[in-house]
Image (cartoon, rainbow over all chains, first blue to last red):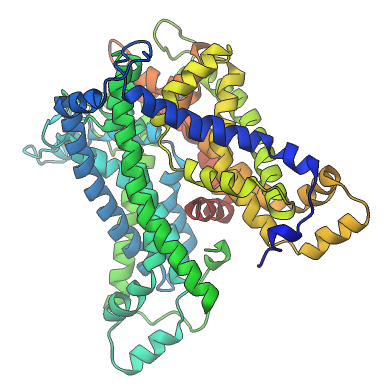
Amino acid sequence: MARPKAARRPRAAAAQIALLPMALTVLGVYIGTVLWSIRISFSSSRIFPKNDFVGLAQYERLFQTERWIVSLNHIVIFGVLFIAACLVLGFVLAVFLDQRVRGENALRTAFLYPYAMSFVATGLVWQWMLNPGLGIQAAVRNLGFPDFQFDWIVSQDMVIYTLVIAAVWQASGLVMAVLLAALRGVDESLWNAARIDGVPRWRYYLSVVLPQLGPAFGTAFVLLAVGVVKVYDVVVAMTQGGPGNASEVPAKFIMDNLFTRANVGLASAASTVMLLTVLALLLPWWYGRSVQARRAAHA
Amino acid sequence: MSASAIKAPNRRSARPRFSPARLGVYALLVSAAVFFLLPLYVMVTTSLKPMDEIRLGQLFAFPLHPTFAPWIEAWSTACTGLECRGIQVGFWNSVKIAVPSTIASIFLGALNGYALSFWRVKWAAPLFGVLMFGAFVPYQVMMYPLVRTLATVGLFGTLPGIVLIHTVFGMPVMTLLFRNYYASVPVELFKAARIDGGGFWRIFLQLMLPMSLPIIAVAVIMQMTNIWNDFLLGLVFAGRENLPMTVQLNNVINTTTGERLYNVNMASTILTSLLPLTVYLISGRWFVRGIAAGAVKG
């Protein structure tokens, strides 16, 4: 729906006053604090902010800090696996749900309910199920497979994958919902045409439907990717970053340095890196959307 | 993406006849449903078992002697540190945080959306653009300056402080939600109200807000769930007296000493998830609509 041009809308002092809270929020919180944080990252602040200027020293220190490098490695492994698994699982579930199956509503509810649960609850449930002493490992051993091994959550090498399992369980329903909505928008007559040409159903989904879901995949990707950068609660609840620092993540590194290790300058440098990462993820998406919008306007 | 797109498939043709391929479709869907439902099953059964049964290590077994004792303990006597007043403390804190935060963020979102859609305020458009970007800024980037600022004005670690934080962080999505909703309201309606002598506030309170009930419902679902499930903001800003349920739940489970009472832990986890799960089950399609709205933010 086209809005009237801004110039033709009425003016009122009340409207300006009503938008003051928004103005304060944007200027004070979304611009002010971000600039402040960036400023701190160029200072030598430890417990209290200092007004000195040490250039990029905190950034150099940051990238020489082993714990930060480790958490970057973890977030890359976690992010790639989590996003790939969510997109694949979400797509498969959406396509299969779209086959006019019985009980579609019940199935959809079952796939999506974890998304209503908090990351904390998600982490705690999986911590319990994966606990080697009494969880899945013990249950399968008691079923008569005494050599069964599933102790990833206490293993330095595998713990990161348990976080992936829990996070995929929580979020793939979201991808399913977003893609299913897009699937329902695909023109059914395309399938009729493809069928007459003897194209098998799976081929139709891969070659005809999948390309049309581009924007929906883009949206799902951005939602998941931004979530990856912020991932914190589920780690704190499930593994506390352990064993050792085998499941340490950047957001937790920042929180620990801000509030328990009194390294405010270092934490601010790390959060600035985080912000730049989010920007790098968002800008191509925004650009793509604005190109699309312009094309739609011309069409 | 509109939520109306998610609906039961049109019965354009009858369900395909039974075939091995159909069997495969159902097999995959049912296996997926088992994967998604398993943690829920484990949570519920564990919470109903006495500890002797849990020590047997049969995670998937049905409780032999179901008991509600762990639920009662979780609600009223579970310990966080030295205090043993149960998870109910966190429950009421979460209510005290979520209700005013939801109301305030929705009111401001609706007000912003209305002013942006119908009125001319020159400086508003660029600010709105920044606000949309704000939806994606990681909280950690803003955390330290906000803590300092709130501490300076005496709001750090108080109930009004955490409500303010949730209101501010809810503003981008709420504003977008209402702006998009008001974009579909015919301008003629607004013009007619103007001709009848309606001013800025009267049109908002008496015409636009009552018309917005469907989108307010979506907004309530989104904000109640998000704020209830928040952990990070509550942990940092709420203060020791107002810790929300998620933070208390984590403390109950991860800071206990001595034997871990898994049945009490799972009962506490269910109790903490009960409100968002109930909202989800009751609201169904509206919940999905909220996701779709959240998905297009930016």
